[in-house]
Amino acid sequence: MLKPELIAQIADHADIPRYLAAQVLTALTDEITEVLAAGESVILAGLGSFVVKAVPERRVRNPRSGELQTVAAHRRVVFRPAKRLKDAAQGA
Image (cartoon, rainbow, N blue to C red; front, side, top):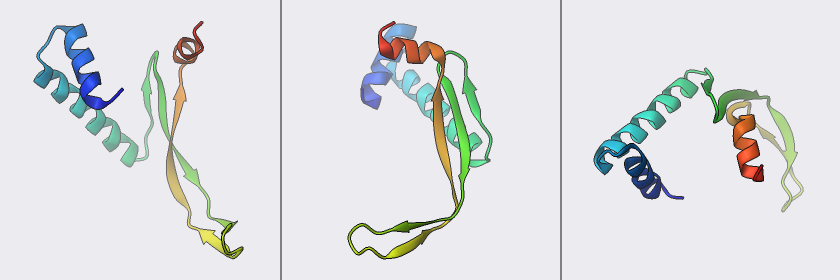
């Protein structure tokens, strides 16, 4: 599902105009982005949690050249689905 399709579904489900659904979805994604950028977690009950994870510096091998390279330490966003979401994806 693409963003315009999601906006249409939200608008139909909430019985609101599409432009308002688009504003709500944009505001939600902007707020989640800001919180994650600050290094905090976002927990949405029934959906899951977005967690910022620190990844340490490590050495990797370039498969094409065989040369060892260093990947700098960085932060990664990890999504952990809630049990309800996992069960729904499994068809349970």
